[in-house]
Length: 175
Image 1 (cartoon, rainbow, N blue to C red):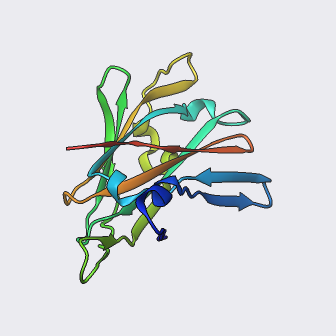
Image 2: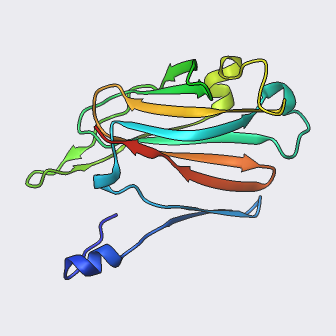
């Protein structure tokens, strides 16, 4: 998406949202775009997920997923790490290599194109969750996404609870 405006104040006043609708489930989800000056090599989220052993027949289970976009002109994989509330790394796994974007021939911008998305439970499996959790049902911690090629990425986390869906935008780690 590109936004054109006659001057800087008008451009700064512009806003955009991406809206997704799921007709069958009846949910609608708003996701703000990631602007070029807001992306980074590392993105972190606060995170909670229902323990796998507590999910069956639980209509209020947290089921999370994520999508990651490579903003670099070079291909790169993204490492996804899960940390507990004490900062101890529980597990880590990398995505396949995401293709690089198109470098603009004149301006120093990249049109991103390498994207991938996963549901957390099958992506990490049992290794993601320790045997205990906060309040006995939920694992709470931090997610860290890092572009392994050193390039910038953007990430959105989606969390389904029953028939509702919410999106979370991570905090870019500026270096």
